[in-house]
Image 1 (cartoon, rainbow, N blue to C red):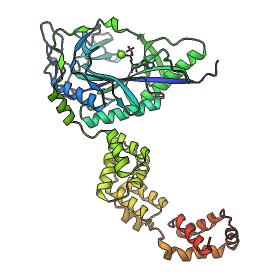
Image 2: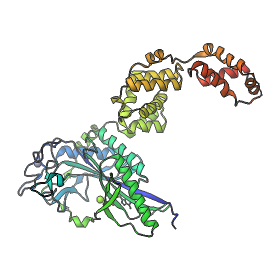
Image 3: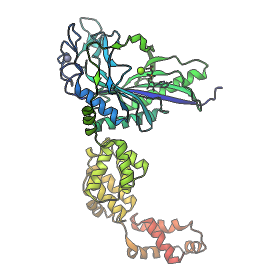
Image 4: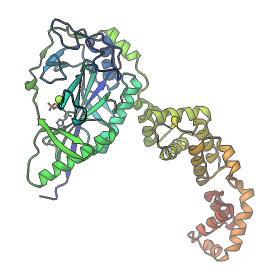
Length: 475
Ligand code: ADP
Ligand code: MG
Ligand code: ZN
């Protein structure tokens, strides 16, 4: 049985810090790197006798997320206490949602959404190692600035089948959330955090295997590598005849080591019960209307529009729409110069491949410059190869593509008039090739094209050369 092929099954739980002005249940401002414990109050410090009040803007953002993911928004939802002890949780419980979340169901791309709810973030524990001793001993210190920050938790169904797909889908989710304007969605800074639930099963099986949970991965690369490492670990276990144990794991991106944090807790371990200090959230028609009115064009809609209205292939539409900075650059280029959309989309890929930033707007290439270059290619004023050299220069130093073409003498040997004598010369120089072509053997056409290319230093269009040869030889 050691050659069984296994299929990974992955579901994600994503925590998003909502960029409201104040915290989830008190009026403290959200903190962005302020000195520790300067953004706190008796409510978010969990002092006795204080009462929480739910942040209406956080609920609004939660509704927008639910709408964007196509879920069912609950007319009424309830806050629950999730009880556990940890130093980053001053009350001894987290106010979250349990069996009556803000939103159930939905879908984004190929992945079904299980639910979306809102809750409060825990404080930040900072472990002070040997290099930063407090009172002479190693310690952990707590910064309560983060405690009480509004979070949306988004839980997917186990619909992902590969590490790379999980990372790609998470990028789509990030783009969607960024478009909504509900969060900074910055993984490095922790405003977007992802836990991955992972199991494997024999390919073709419909049953779910025992899952493990990889906690708190803070970059797309780590998520992909972490999932890959955990899938490999589970495969090794099963091939050795051992069982996967349901537990919560930590992935160390430096060493790729996976270590157990704790055996998996069950819901009843948290003694969930309805938060007695908060009334249930009632979603009015006005709140729904306001959330709907705030909805921008989302990446999935944008991809559809690129396909339907601009005639892009599904792959191009998806590439540009799922990474909104690419879509924005593409649309800016289209607006700057009336270029054909599909060739422009193809050249976006050429551009991206040459950049070391994610955002072409941060490069030296102006959207209009790319559009102008693509226009020159489609009008056959420059060949593909020459245009790639122009693009190299645009990426290196910016500028105007037409000027670069003139300065480097890259203008294509255009039209029949200019090419015709060059093709004739190539035919005259290769009578044996001409004889073969006449017998219907098209193979040596490359000799003629190559000859013309050498003479023109690559500025001739190979297709055009072929066309002229055929016309001349009556093929
Ligand atoms: P738990 O009760 O352990 O929190 P849930 O059923 O709430 O588990 O699911 C949590 C996450 O784990 C969801 O994203 C879900 O899609 C995913 N998941 C559930 N079962 C599996 C499985 N067997 N393999 C991979 N992911 C799973
Ligand atoms: Mg869960
Ligand atoms: Zn507070």
